[in-house]
Each structure stands twice: as structure tokens, then as C-alpha cells.
Image (tube, rainbow, N blue to C red):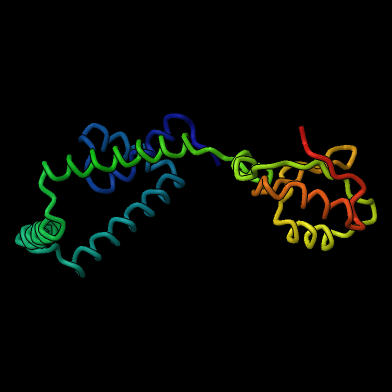
Length: 199
């Protein structure tokens, strides 16, 4: 059954009343109301039981002696001092270490931002620079990759561009003086349709 506002206020004061922490006026008011309200009496019995429980616990476990705080405090200080000595972190060293970490992080950020993500293939400018002479080559449609590799090995050449949409490859050789011999080998092979000097 719900209490009225006045009785609800009295109910809230019962824990303090049980511990004798209310003024004399309030005590008289509470006692007058308690005599006519069995629900509030039941609530008071509950808080009296709680108080008795706390009193029993207090008797079973006496409060620690006064010197317990200094003992705990001295142990904490010793442990702090030990940890401090391990790392030798005086304030100047700590500040220097923080600055070092900050500079490392900034350096890493610059490094990551300046990374160039690119792929290098066999037709890069570096490979083109190694070739002294370029030849346009068109292979037969049914030719196998193995046959192309064997022919390139024979002429000591490499594909530096292609294939284009029309099937044109650009093959580079290092020795310009051998260009005529290489063109002759390419034209006489059974897998090449066209072999001409590149412009």
C-alpha cells in the first residue's frame, strides 16, 4: 500500500531514527506517527535489524589499530621508490624521453606520407635505357610463350613494350652492331610474321 507524502518522508527518516541521528522534535513526530502506522513499524523493525547486524560485525571484526595506515603508506612509498630507481626517471629524463617519442612519431608520419606506391614492370624506362636498338615484332597468333622466350634468349633480347592492340611488340637488344643478324634470325624463325627496325 503506497504511503502519503508525509508518511513517505517519515519512512525516509527511519534509518536515521534507528541510529538515533534525528533531532528531539523529529523523534517525537516520528514516534507519534509510528504508533498508528503498522507498515512504518515494520519498516523500522527492518532498519533496527540492519543496525544490529552492523553492530555484530563491528564486534566480530574490531577496527584496525592506529598504526595500520603508516605501515601501508610506508610500503607504498618503498614500492614507488623501487620502481622509480629501476627506470631512473627523473623529470629531465622524462621530458627528454617524451620529446624523443614525439620526434620519432613525426619522422614516421613524414616517411609514410612520402612513400611512393608504384609498380615496376619489364617495360620501364630503365629497361629501355639498357637497350641500344629496338625492333618491332609481330608474332603468329598460335605461338606459345615458351617459343617466344627461346627466341628472345637466342637473340639476347627482351620485350620492352607491347603487345599493342594490333599484336605489335617492341623487342630491345643491347648490342647495336648485331642488329642485322638479329633481324635475320627473327625473320627466318617460324613464329614471327613481321620484324622491322623501330623508328
